[in-house]
Image (cartoon, rainbow, N blue to C red; front, side, top):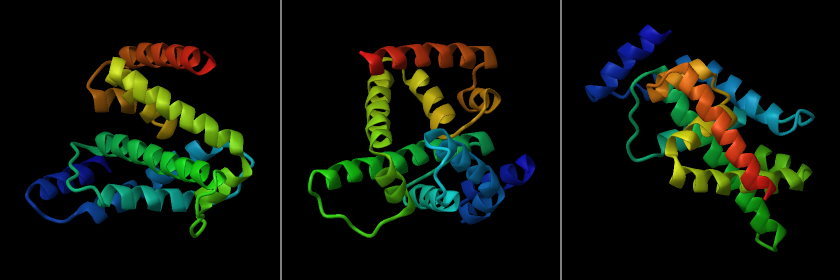
Length: 184
């Protein structure tokens, strides 16, 4: 699979439109990431992981210019987009709660309407990650890839170009920092 993606990335660098072909190859991996994230948030919810994958894809496609080096880098970008999709919906739900005009409901809206505490926790995590990124962007990236994308240590290591032991240390540091920030 990685060889196919490498060939397609080379074609993309040559100006060919192969994004949909790459997406088709990594679709199952993106769905795994969405499943991980959804189960992490609330294992009792029964909504479509496919919709999160599709919203993530649309977010990725709608970016003005997207480029990536390999499958792991693609998945890292997808992790970030999943974070953005979930945070955007959490913010919308928070605004709706304060009297905003609700629009057509999506499965993410349904998820958040069932668990108000999850909305607040997700927004708190996002704000803490933004603060962490100002202090150490790599730690913030590790958390985003692991927490929002469900990427494993090896995949994160490949994306960041650092050793797995460094990723493990970064993950431990970031978790400790976030725990302190979110409890304080």
